[in-house]
Length: 182
Image 1 (cartoon, rainbow, N blue to C red):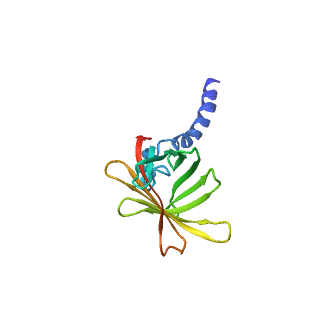
Image 2 (image 1 turned 60 degrees about the horizontal axis):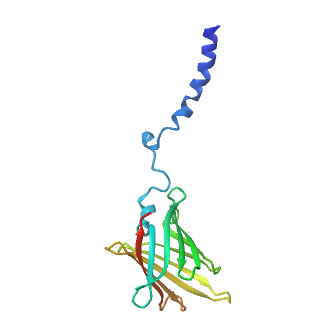
Image 3 (image 1 turned 90 degrees about the vertical axis):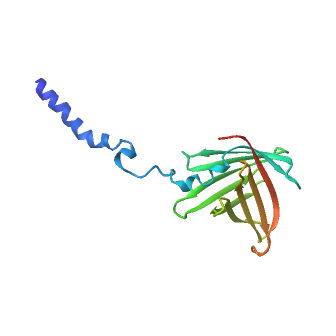
């Protein structure tokens, strides 16, 4: 009777062995790394952290604070911007493996929605462009470039174009001074 019970219990356990083996770590199975651990997903990591943002004519005036953190198991960066007046905005930034491009989706407390796309330039700066509809049937091109500096700061240069990119005007120049790392 005991022998039959052991056989009865051990057969189902043997049947589950392939399933249990499938839970072994990916490195043990020789599989590729998890979805968002490729180097491309780390290209914008220089922007991670808590920042004081300086602006104005000489970039000496504190104009706001920005906090950038990893979310979605490291697959995206979430930004939370607050200006000196208390208005805020949020963005979600993600590297899309299918298009091999970065995308930013921004929403401000003023209701402005902006979608940007781009990527890492050869000089190490992240550059993205998009179009901001004006609500009257027209649109304005937007370009934002984030450039990491040797001293750890980041320069954000935001430009706009009303003629499809033939001419660009500086809309905002901010210098990010790190308060804390992520």
